[in-house]
Image 1 (cartoon, rainbow, N blue to C red):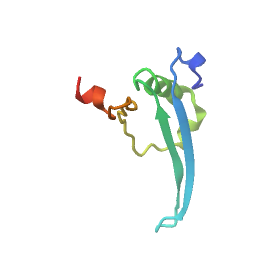
Image 2 (cartoon, one colour):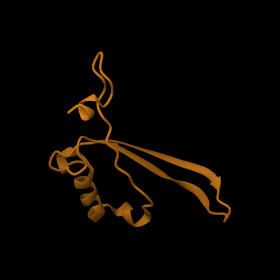
Image 3 (cartoon, rainbow, N blue to C red):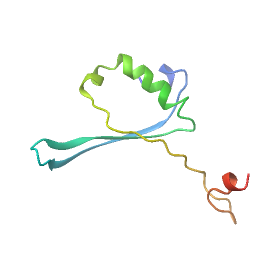
Image 4 (cartoon, one colour):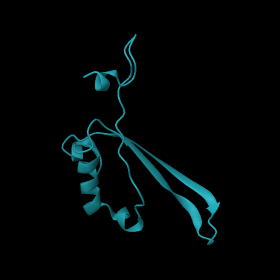
Length: 90
């Protein structure tokens, strides 16, 4: 369902990491899934794919979303330059 061929070419590099860190003080498991995605533009990558999954993925009813964030990461530095130069000296 998340393949580019099923989403108008929307692409992203996705990784998920499950964790289990014992029990919380209330006895419930401290466990979950961390999801990380890299893409050039969240509006044409992640958001487009997530909208499709929200309506059609049977796993959604078992999930509880707790938080999210979007970070801008500048490209690498040219020889003699520095990371972020194209943003700061534009």
